[in-house]
Length: 264
Image 1 (cartoon, rainbow, N blue to C red):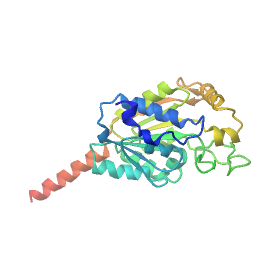
Image 2 (image 1 turned 135 degrees about the vertical axis):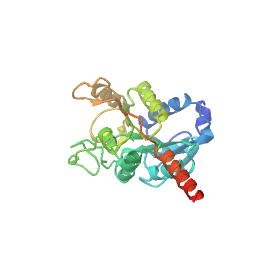
Image 3 (image 1 turned 180 degrees about the vertical axis):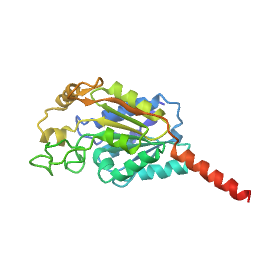
């Protein structure tokens, strides 16, 4: 597959702000997907509500733009009904960890075969910059003018604790590394989560005086690490294990029950 096959050209140009990292995440995703020998008709991309969730509208696959926080349950229903589909969820930090947080942890617990890519820009960007469950402590937001008093989730540890069988974190400042992580997540049979540290210059960056989009990317370069450098945000794969996949187990149970009843 090439970009023209994967994008709805009539939906361009996109609506993301200049310097927003979401286009970089989408590009890394498309590069990773292009490596796979997948029929576009067998790919489903689901999103909820938010800046990141606009991505599904630009993609020429089976796509669904759902209600706020509900991308994962919609995706779960699709995967259960059509297990042959490669089902991918594109979601934001607010969409997936606030109103959608309960759905996230239970999909991870069940180990249903979904690839969930979380665009983490630390803010609700579409609705004017409210703080999210991933906004760092004491950082500014429109709903936290004196600093966010809450402490954020560590999404990697949250997914690990919930039972996800593939968990990774990448950053827009390292797009090729991010592409590799997404590719690994797509290949994984089971629930995979890839968190992406991405920049929002319009709300998070401006509120917190982080400078231009280039400055924000430089901040990422200096404050993330693939080698576990102390005091930085760790990047890489943190969980990669095999466990029975929910949908396959469910279908086997249905078959076993049906065969048992027919033998009565």
